[in-house]
Length: 287
Image (cartoon, rainbow, N blue to C red; front, side):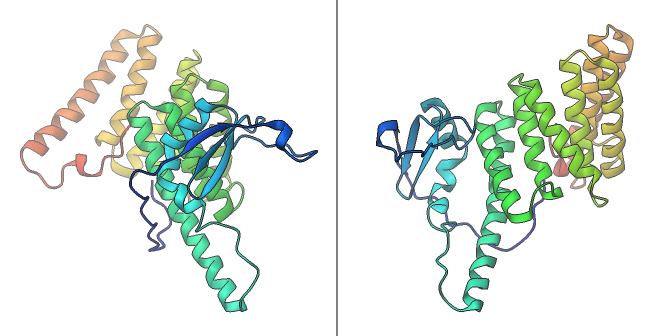
């Protein structure tokens, strides 16, 4: 998923960055002050302390997932680059600072999306959720509520919750993504395809097979518009379609779709082994 190009380079994370997790003492807090979890919004019970910042979480497990999912790579930035600016300096200096913070936020969105995607591919859905959550937070700050640039984070969150069989949460984020796409005329076919594929997977998991078939047909349509019906990106839609047919006990239709997936990948790999620089694997996005 492409992000806005700014040319801003994030500072690399220090090697062997350490952190600790401490239990919060509610009695030590000022009166009428309550702390909430960075990820869940529930009351915070622990604090994660890193060299340049402290963040609050509902449990030790959630704090560790946040650290392993994304914070290990961005905590040094959260504690310095994105610190609230002092209201000092000339108007030009404040504007330069605002542009730098925006560029940093955009770069952080790209990094968080990259990490969320990697965790999902590896099946580490609990780690993908914090990465996508921070992506959504930075994108909302940089672009505003409900903007098209938030859709990749919505989709990563939906896919991670799908992987964890948390279907209500998955549908919540798919609905937000769908609404953002409906409001925008310039949405890419890639985003439309991924949205429909995830809706299809959700409905299939819920046993809503007819709804799943309609969504997956739209997925294949949008993917075909983008890269063609025989591209390996489109084959992911055929594969999900085959799974739904199989669940409906429509074995012949399922086998036909599975055969199509095998044929697409066979021709792709044959082109790869033949050193064809134009083979579709070079642009594949995953399924």
